[in-house]
Image (cartoon, rainbow, N blue to C red; front, side, top):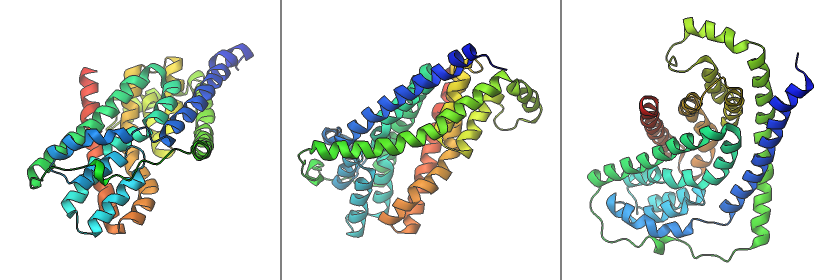
Length: 318
């Protein structure tokens, strides 16, 4: 069915390049994370904290979230238990950390996305960054109107002392994270990319297009191939949808805009379940289970809303 030259140029060589770039990217991204590259962001937290009428501990947690989400949430939980934060302030502070949490994983995320969806990576990342910024603006706006004014805050004073880097420990952390993340990505990337290469060349999507034209519902703004990306993100993980998107983009079955919209849609629909699977266990260990679930619901609702806003904007004006 497929000649060896076709398989090499259409499947094996693209997969080889993808695996090489992902391995390099995951390593570099994890190294950046392990080096605590964002501690200096503390200086930028103060004006945002003042604008949102949040407390100094909220700004310190915001800065901490650039390199450790667990540490940031632990700071908030301890402050809440010590009555230094009210329930409203805790919720808003947790939502406020959405932007640094996004940037925490951005280096690794970029180097995974870029080799898979290539030209579609920049508009996709621009939209997700825009949604994170939008969430921060919304939280500041809400805090401005529902929280009382605060005195001048000293955000940096709430941060722990800057420790001297131990390169041996840093490299060990990078090695552990690299091994775990790279294996997980490859488990999805290689088979999914191969599957979609085969499906594209066996007429599967032509048949699906005829079927979907009669049975499509709420996702009618997406072509059938794009819907399959959404389904994979729901059924598997984000990397599975990326692998499918990369294969369809490389084959010319989908354009950049369709791929970006499919990934945004899949992101919105799959996030709640991923949050319950991955966030709830460690959230419940930091906050009490009821509060942890409430924070996750607030986070996911705001996240979905912001992605819908930027996604709709990209659909009409992108």
